[in-house]
Amino acid sequence: MKLILSTAALAVGFAATGAVHAADAAKAAALIKGSDCMACHAEATKLVGPSYKDVAKKYDASHVDALVKKIKAGGSGAWGAVPMTPHPNLKDEDVKVIVEWILSLK
Image (cartoon, rainbow, N blue to C red; front, side, top):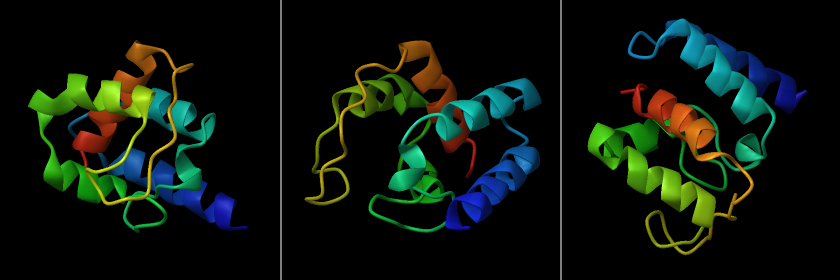
């Protein structure tokens, strides 16, 4: 049930996002749904990791490449001691779509 509500909230967030094209938002939604991102992150609520909105508040478009690398490599420190697991199997271009959508949540 929690996953269904999170997915529904994610879809609403994508629909409300004006800074990212609808096709990119839909692609980001599919990529996030197909990954383990939602196990630790939610759009507006801190779970294990920061909410996507908190990430958008902290970073801007100049950080896209660094955030792509961070997601792929994993690590800790930017948001406390709890490490983010690495995601080396995700394609850079897919992670970039996700990051750009996250940053559009300002």
